[in-house]
Image (cartoon, rainbow, N blue to C red):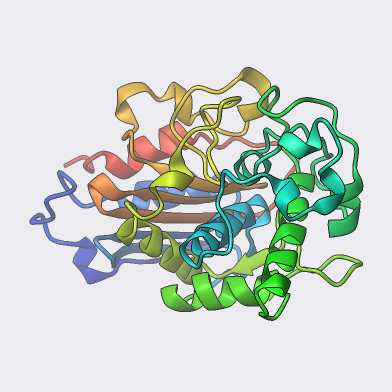
Length: 319
């Protein structure tokens, strides 16, 4: 199906100080659609300048974020810090009492859970229940190994559930996330999957429209300083922070899904990215006043290059 391309705000005027020229919407749309893209939305200083949909998707079509959900959970963690519910560097065992006597688990911090450097292994796509994640054995010491997967975020879901219970609040982490993250941004999650335990999936459960996901990006851009602690690279993988990807080289195969770290000086150093399977992407580049959403069909193999796409976003169109 032919792409529907919507150019808004006259593709912005040349007066925008953050970019040398408006983005080349046709080129961006073509790049995305050639790689099974369904939606593309570019905001400059909060104003939509490019919006495109393909293969039957529209502005009202919610699409799965897959692991882009982790970045929403990271923002929930930041809200919980602001509310005095937790500290990212406190031991998880302060809340998970069953970890206190374990010589490895007792040393794990909440930050290490959220940077997936705790030592808790898991299989991508196999989401355990909160209880199963908490009970799972570790295979490494904290900060020894980056292990990408859903289990650490499910364990954090149980931490949040218990924190909320102890504070006398409703114990559903998703209800807290909606109240403290989505509603302030004016965003809605059209769907959020739950596991067999009835609990919201923290690593990969959300589905949103491109416009709603962009609202989250705008919240991050506006509060970049407040979220600074989320964007500190982990000890085991400098390409990953608390739920967000960074433009730093990472340890080989574990970051094969993004080549941002290989983009060199062409990639702004303040870029942060939420990423999910199928090359779902939310880029936030505060220095350029940019928020970019790209959503696509899930497929087995990827031909997506984050570095190439970001360069296209930043390049002036050919005259």
